[in-house]
Image: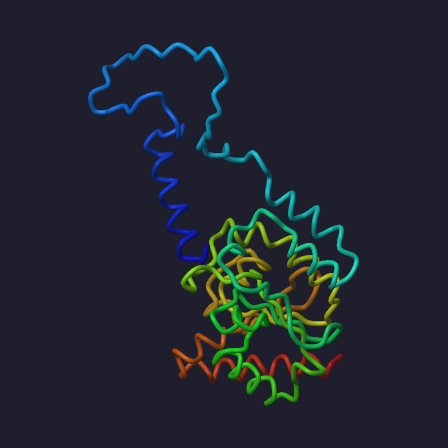
Length: 257
């Protein structure tokens, strides 16, 4: 089943449940528009009859954030964390994605960049920031003598592409946050670059990148600087002046040790 089929089937199932459908099999067809206010239940069959129930799982039955926290805590290294993400069963985004987008760059680098979510190109290649926005990011890093090969490590808040490149939902960010926190702890960078609104929400608990950008703060015990997402800069070239100022601030911070 491809992504479109999966999400269409899920929407149809959710609609049926909201209408009150709670069983797939009945003894006879029932016209619900002709059912009186009170209907006597038919007698149970003499012999057991197999039936397939279609019911919604009770909300909150599984604490997915707690499950994510436990899975992330068990990872002792980056490969273990990647394996924990691949095995995590509670994020539906993985059902519609081609690849897990875990990281790129140099593990152990002084700078760790945290983006938002994979797009089409990232989903295809399984690496973050490889499309047009990624090409611009590489140019921005090169302008201050940084690169993926040796001095930068990159990941995203979400490791799977949302359908149609929609924005991450708050519950998806909350579910993946323990993995991101463990990722930062294992990568152990000196500095975090928090790219875009959704990354700010995950790491700083705030939104409003135009207000937050350029001001040093702390995230996960690390010095952190929020910056515009390269995709935003492609849409708004005039903001490149502020982005350049932020890059210079990052360069100065690294020079100070």
